Image (cartoon, rainbow, N blue to C red; front, side, top):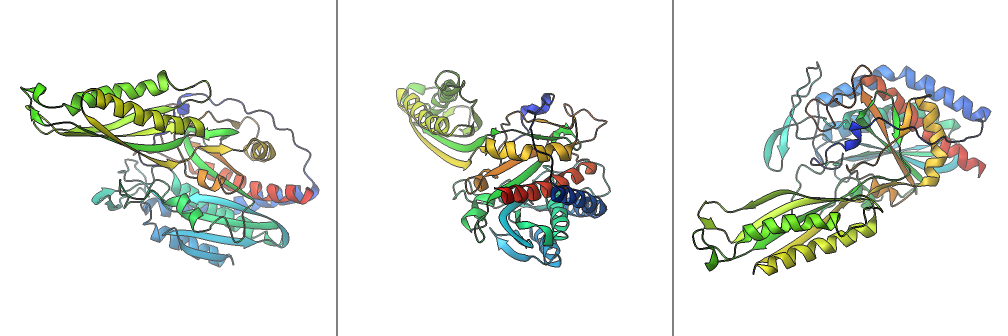
Length: 450
């Protein structure tokens, strides 16, 4: 979920709230028949779904290295008779299922990559994999649940392929690499990977996608619980670098140089006022965090340079651009006040995930029906980020959460996504299959009425 440094949002500490009631007409006989078929087919494939998930979990792969996973996916989609493209955005796979009747194109997305985390769960299929990440050998684990995403979309593909003659439209299955960032990520390199690269290579075209849906499993909710939110749901994430240059001198004679460490300390404090005193947080919340700062190598030498890196989280595009300007202005002028110089670089990584309210209103009855009474709710805003936002720039898209914490455990204390103890209750996965299948079908059926 949005880069290795994006932790699970604080909503894991909150009880889910009730979602607004979504009024929907009684389903047509055709819709009822298709819904029943989905339920039947999902139940029939549940054991295979679990087997896929365990196999993928035991063999995790980092971003842009998902060759085994991609091969498993591609072979499965070909067996279902789909048009399949491989090597999209390095290791991505796209399958196109053409329905028996004309209609819209619905895209369903799953991410495939794992994280450089050493698994601590005592499971027969626990990961013991190792790989190279940023030039270092690391342990690898599906600590964010992308193994479940991939398995659920594989099962969804089989469910809908078995019904293709009855589908009034087509379904594009997007299996995406590197949502968390590629294993070969270079800090100063071009920031295009995962969803952004897939969009750049035309995944939302030929045929053009009319709507796109995606989900993410979460430890914040009990297994099978579904949560979603209209409007801004997950924050944008940007990364910044600040280099402060002074003049090196002896630590006993600070007046003979320019101290970039003191200037950097003042900058760290100063940029906190961007949110607390300069931004309209009544519009949307925002965060500016310095995550690392480095400078100097000896107790009695004032160094020439200090470098720091950090992250910016926002929901509003206008606020984001304003914070970027204020960050540069604040750092540069604080440094200048002490005779130092600050160089600021900001790289936009992921945009905010924004669920169009009209699409949410249309699809909420589907998720309510799949989840069942008392098993769905309104998702609080999350400070974590997701590159699903790039698909939403190309077509209306809705993203939602699926709970995976065992029902006898407290979601408030369950290990979060990205934890080495993150655990997904496999009983939740059939809800994800049913949700994605039903959303595709119901969107198509609604288009037939319009």
